[in-house]
Image (cartoon, rainbow, N blue to C red; front, top):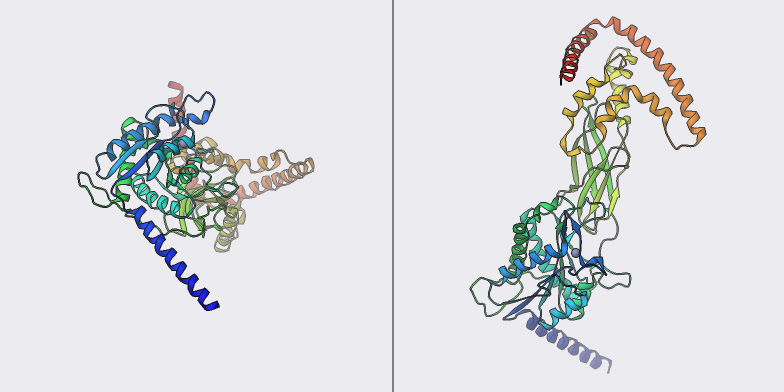
Amino acid sequence: MGKKRLLKRYFAALFFCFALFLMDNQTEAKQNITVVIDPGHGGSGVDDEAELGAIYHNKYEKEMTLEIAKAMKEELEQYSNLTVVLTREEDKRLSLEERAQIAAQAGGDILISLHLNASLGHEMYGAEIWTSAFGEYYATGRGLGETFLKELTQLGLADRSIKTKLSREGNDYYGIIRHGVSFGIPTIIVEHGHMDSGDWEYMDSQEKLRELGKRDANAVAQYYGLKKNVYKAKVEPTVIVETPIEPVLPDTTGPDKVELTLLDYDRTTGIAHLELLAVEEESKLMYYAISIDSGKEWGELTLWPEGEGTVSIEMNLGKDFDKEVVAKVYNNYEGNTESNQLKVSAYLEEEVKEEEKAAEPDSEDIIFPVEEEEPVEMMEESLPFEEPSVFEEYPIVKENPIEEKKTIETKAEIPQESTSREELYLLLGAVTAGILVTSILIVVLLWSRTITKRKKRERQRRIRMGMDTFEYKMGRRT
Ligand SMILES: [Zn+2]
């Protein structure tokens, strides 16, 4: 009895699988494909600002997506086995459901919603594809997404990958995807690039928007293996993605591990070599940024090299840098993790100790090397030349020259701390100042003995002073 029942069930399951296989084949192999292109946003924006989409450089996303869509349609229509439908051909308000309805009425096989991106901090860049997290809708979206990203990255845009996003209820987060799927149409959102970052160069003219549209058309043609003027008996996707059984969940956490190490730091040139290690199990590493003030301000996002676990960084920290360097690594879901706070001064102390051991016991000479009346302006002039353009944003240029002289003052000036702390700092400052003054005296005495060093310094100073007076004169003339 039990065995018979089991056998029955087994055959039923087998038949079900076979039926599914047949159905699947029927939906995949078609003679004619209907592609529905949805230019994102549209409308006056009076009642709902979202109708306008993003606005940057005095350009509206709703107008740009329409331009891309029209070019995409024009290009796609040159291919055989294809019907192309636009959800809107003018600046017109349409709900997300209405867009999906239009796609369904047209018998759409795929619905492609075109958008341009922007980020809150205006620091992100790159192209990305959003797809449904579920079953065959995920599989088709992912396959399509791959051809889209291939085209867009060939153009030069960064690859922010194919992603899913879920609402709190566990449905697809984006309305157009949710509605498209509810009508049985695999739907993707193509975010071509960011209007508020360097990506703007890929969309700043009508020709460039049309180029984006052409790339989108190539992507669809590639996905279905379509040819211009060659009619095929059967159209099938060329990119086959296995249908996932479970929903494909987005990565909601930052990289699992981020570690920053200092390889070396030359305090005379200010050049440091760092190594940044990051581990990301769920998604992929996307960007990294460096802060040279313990994470208050961040440099621009640098692309994480594809497939790498570590990144070597060379940067100019400025001379005698004594603050903390921190790194922040992002995955492609914009989740980020900060590294350890790297103390460069600890490295310097190590170095100084080694130098002390090596040299004669003139320890003061090393600890206070620039105490003599080195003109501050001269150092300011020489610094900008050593600043690498990549880290222009960092305010180190102005901070550094004064640093040697200011150590005492800044320590005493630390703001917004509790008053007892302030007093402590003041006291500390006063004591340090006292020590410093006596040290300077000792140093001066010691230095008078090291004549060769002194001579060198004099010579350099004379040269600099010469330049200084020359520039001063020039300044007065103009
Ligand atoms: Zn948009």
